[in-house]
Image (cartoon, rainbow, N blue to C red; front, side, top):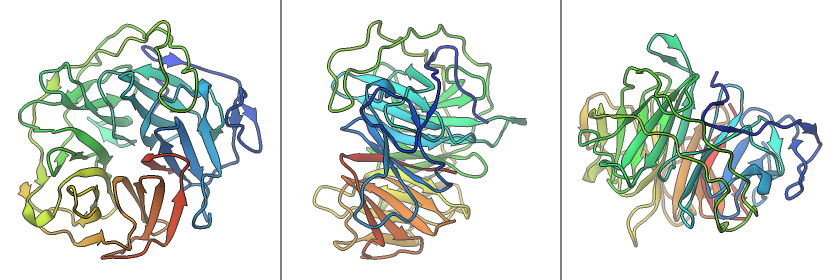
Length: 373
């Protein structure tokens, strides 16, 4: 279980009002219907909202519910992840204000809901992954956030959190990791870390470093909610939240790196790993080239893996233009891809220039996807 972070985080607790539907834009705090497992969530980055898509929705439909409004503190939502209690965690980055937040929402929350936690973090966070696996012989949850912190000597970093910590207990950065603008992140069943290098034309796997004592920090001052749920909010909250301190990075090499001409990896953005260890990569390609989803078998060797994918979803009929995230669901047998203002749904064995099985619409630009466990 990944608990709510309380010290160094702004904790915004509120009585939950049970409602049958969301009230996006109102001041009330709502909990939606009992969303079943495998319900799809998608960030709406330019309207500061999270769309919720029910199982079995018809193609061409938009979100059935939304999380959005000034009370949510959503501010350029990027990527999503669920913890073992089904609470939703969202990375946020607003390039207009350089404001970055990590926000936690109660499971089943909808509408203009107060978050459980909203904390200022340094840099420009993107990918996030959470897994309740064993870390250093202790049953704890692990959360990974991909971040770019321009003030650091090695700006591209992976921030590592463990149970009970209020700040990252460790980070991965330095010359050996060779991270180049980390984007999407994923964790497999053994808590091995996978990350895309958006500007590095590569995908890395890291073995989790042994946790060190949690760095101590001062609680962040309480930020005020953003004034509006849409666009790029102007100004900054008063008082301005203080970013959490950055731990000393661990300088380690990746276990393996998927890169090279045979891979076809050019601009990888999102990533996911299925139960068999197959790696799914959303790739925007190069300017004038084809966007794709590339599927790689679980590597059997270490070092540089310059091998062709076992499957490629690519072509004019796929609808892929600028994919930003990918999630695979072996239970439902679908691959979900965030692309522009759409979510493209393909069968899990899709290959070639295949028409999507379903297309869901979004009111704004979709960046990240999350599936309720």
